[in-house]
Length: 348
Length: 264
Image (cartoon, rainbow over all chains, first blue to last red; front, side, top):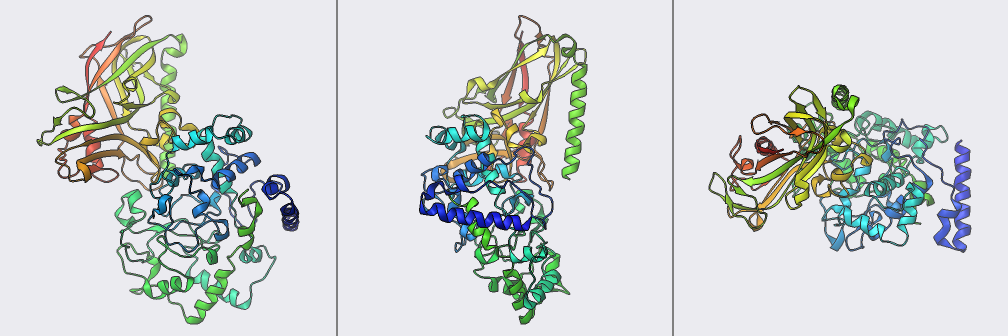
């Protein structure tokens, strides 16, 4: 099966290369067979409700077109892909917080979009409970795309291309918000990252180096409590000891209004770490070294600090310099360069 | 928690479907029109958006620029005690004072004389968590319901009242009450779902029968939003949204409905 995937991958690449010589705009439509949604061998069962939104080739392609189309923003300057860039694992590398229309700034770091079929909630605070409802937030947010949904539906309806694509995908030329959101979900659900070296090792197709193996041991002892394999998040909300920021973003508390949720944020996946800096909910840490330093020496004692980050009255995670280097070596095995180059997910 | 909620829903649905089977419409299938009118007033005056000047018990003057709220899950009880539950696919309504037609709701009920009406002010928790396909009409977050939906905290805004007041300390003297909260999806949180029950037996019971179109005329006194169970001063809080204070607004707005009369 793995070989088949490889072969298909190679075929894609060849096809793309060939077609690149001729007509690049038709590369994915004509030459990449649609693989559909499959669960990687080392992944658990997905949690998305495929029963109400089964993925089809036409639905996926419509979703991909929407994802890359600036028509979704008020002044047609921003697309989903503006802040979720494939070459950065669908985040916006190098920006603490993203720029919306008219260069307006939000308060949180745009998360990488990957493995969303396993995500039990969306956003850093988990405020959104269904992937199908997620795009409404950035489309209508003043700091992001600043449009309204009725207007977006109207723009799509009156475009020369979209009604036919909606008919292909959903059987009706009438554009509805529900179908638009379902198409976007279909594209995002296909953004699966499971081709890292770590995944190959887990599928027994590769082996860790000594250093990576040492790092894996450190990881399992000191990190996997929250960054649970194989998704490298347990989807929970935790306070990891970051001091409150200027805007005093209290994270999960805004959603639940529970005292013990103050300053808690969703545990992010560690996959594709190399491509997704800066780190943390507000992008305050610029590199991996700073992140590990935070856990070694920077964890603030706060009322809701995660218990796993306090040992014998001391905050933080003890880590020798050697362990730190090993850990970094292991974390790099979570990079998935194929995900960044997958032509299926690229702008058509 | 999620499972508890789901189980509860399932139980409610089963109950609802059981009671429906005992209503006469199953056997006879004869239904006739009944309307319910939501007539908005401010104490002793008619509500006029943007132009009317009013004041609350705390002597704070104000104007209202927007008044919208969801009413749903209507249940009618006749004088024999038979209960008719309006089907799920047609029991969600968005009342909008700026759209007069939205303040008159039409129902087709089994014939009979009705003595009690109940509804939810807001949207029940099951519908708050339904797939996008089932959020149609007034509940469409990409259409009619877009103004009544929190995208950042998946859920409907049950009640929205905006206006201005010299007592408000907010920018441009605005005040905004945006109240929602269905109890939370995984973590329990604010639940502002209110069931309103109205006795129709004192001010004229509607007689639902062929050829008639009785109208239940409700007076909805928005002054109760300020001066109901709790006294809310605009000078203290002119912007109340998803926070603990919203519970006080919800307690208050649950008391604003009065059966004034029935036009038979």
